[in-house]
Image 1 (cartoon, rainbow, N blue to C red):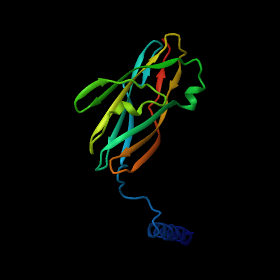
Image 2 (image 1 turned 180 degrees about the horizontal axis):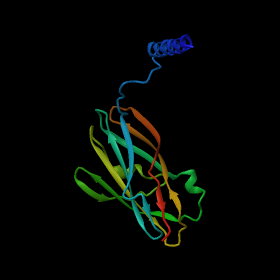
Image 3 (image 1 turned 135 degrees about the vertical axis):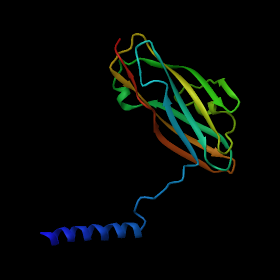
Image 4 (image 1 turned 135 degrees about the horizontal axis):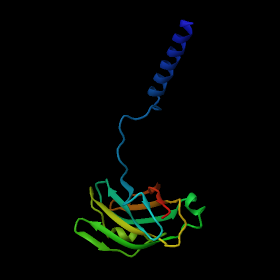
Length: 174
């Protein structure tokens, strides 16, 4: 019985060695993408008639400026399965190194212009959309979104990313 255990351990060790030699083992550390999009929400829950701020932060990890951004935002499939959940984006704010300003695009396909003209290397821009849940909305459901983005850099390269998912917001009954 003991020799069977040794054979299994030996086979596992040989397999791990082969994977490591041929580059199929997980990397010890990963470098960040040239541009990265992250989401956060001001609250995990709300009630009908309430609001939640949805913040999208685009970070430039490359050594060249981001000159152009195109971004979409759409509800997740589970959100679309609850037609009784009524919501809309009612406000937009851009936060950058010089402070906050209002912006105009609230989706689904006009968010890119909100990030401003350029994003220098190592800097981020945050666009915050205000999600308004209608007072006659259904409850006990989650509202979530996903996003794709495309960024062009000053060295004429580009990057496509996504889908990136937002944290779900739970609509509680009052």
